[in-house]
Image (tube, rainbow, N blue to C red; front, side, top):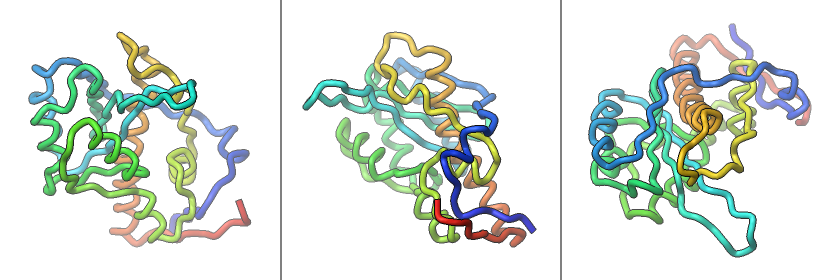
Length: 206
């Protein structure tokens, strides 16, 4: 029987080893490459999804979503929306009800994408709702991943410039890790539920 704590403190996360996506990262920055990427992703029944937006440090100034990350267990595509916009092939994936797209706090991601181009989201599953139904109180990506795998997802690149001409390796790794972590956590929890070999353990107030 596997014990899964229902929550964890930031202090408990701090000393954990850092995890980084180790698979292929493919940056899509031209419309010509979008259809090929989407066709590959559509061959998988489940993918992880996330977005990044250039941070604003000026009052009243905001930016549109810059990056859409969609990941399988071993390959992550980074769609540079500030260059390619929202091509029809990408919209078709976001509206495909046959494919499960797993993310965290998806309402915000979907709204930011819809500001670039209207679409009807289908096939989305929010991990925050999913884990709450299992009795897990943790809601952040970092806390959930630490609870399940005993590793820490670094957030050091979150406030970097996602509209830079060229993304750094650290930015690409960070962005890919967030999307990949979602699909990995979902698959792990589905396996636990299938085997019925887990129990959620309540911990002291975090």
